[in-house]
Length: 185
Image (cartoon, rainbow, N blue to C red; front, side, top):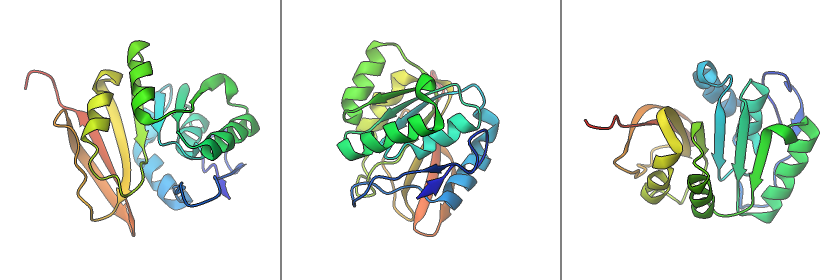
């Protein structure tokens, strides 16, 4: 059981998918992560890849984000997302995509979507994310922030199009933030 930490839905309980295929972001880590991101959240458009319960994008919506796209290929995760979205009454501010990250990126690229904030919470075993980051290039603007949750102490490989500008670790979990490198440098 998890809760929304701040904003209009503060204190509301949300569910997490059962089983070992998802790893919900702990409340204290989410709180620290969102304290770092709070200035960019109001009015932002969110992409949440490997969304699991949807806790990251739902927290952002509670804190003033405009819209969120939640992507997960797991059927149980998608069902829990739907319940959480309905419980928080965010159906009008969300879009669910029940597919893998690659299909979602292709669809969103065709639709010419651009996001202000992208959450990536892939399985910890997935440490080579060059293909994922490369697929996100067209979905980012000059100020887009990509927030990657990963296992602390592990070096994650990302596309050369992005640079890490901030990271923090809390025990076993780490969060790294990336921005698109300026074109023409």
